[in-house]
Image 1 (cartoon, rainbow, N blue to C red):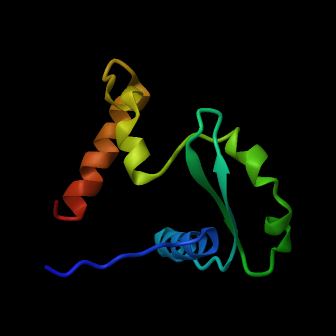
Image 2 (image 1 turned 90 degrees about the vertical axis):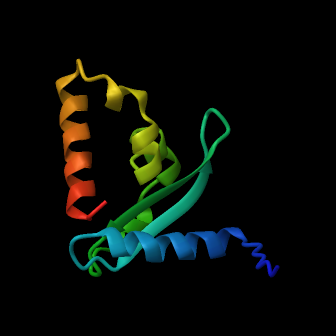
Image 3 (image 1 turned 180 degrees about the vertical axis):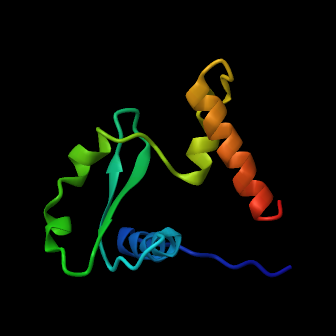
Length: 108
């Protein structure tokens, strides 16, 4: 049995995640500012902000501060958010319906 091993430093991780996130954007954005930060509950989180190629202000953002003001919005963390499954909430019901529609559109 063959195994492959990887040991990545912070720059490697950020580069891989930046390339992945750029594929998720709907329009051509080529400047990004990304950082790994430790949350209040000691989780490591990636904070990423993207902007247009001509917008250098993206590099002036305080990503650590941004991390404390925005919710988790990754594909897995969105599934794990218990409020998404409280169907008494109209927002949660709408989010779940959109997620199901996305799965159906992707043929899953």
